[in-house]
Image (cartoon, rainbow, N blue to C red):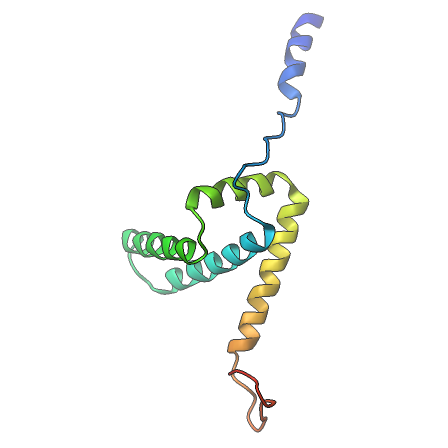
Length: 123
């Protein structure tokens, strides 16, 4: 009875942690990309296009986001996968992405009636 149990033990071990990719993107870059991709996803969902058209729109805009940030989709995927293995890193990335999106939302929100923006404020 003991030999089958010994054979099952290696299957329970945690696989080796993958090495850090050579083209690992900095967390700050991943934060901006994650925020931009979530905004894109919301825009596509609100476009009310058919499934195929939505997918085409998303992929075209995703490619533009990567191009604007001088990042390849494969570098993003490898970096995201690497950070996702490290739960603490991914928590930090999403926390910062949420903060980034909240700041964007505040910047785009209309000013309450009767208030005057401070000098030099961009609206």
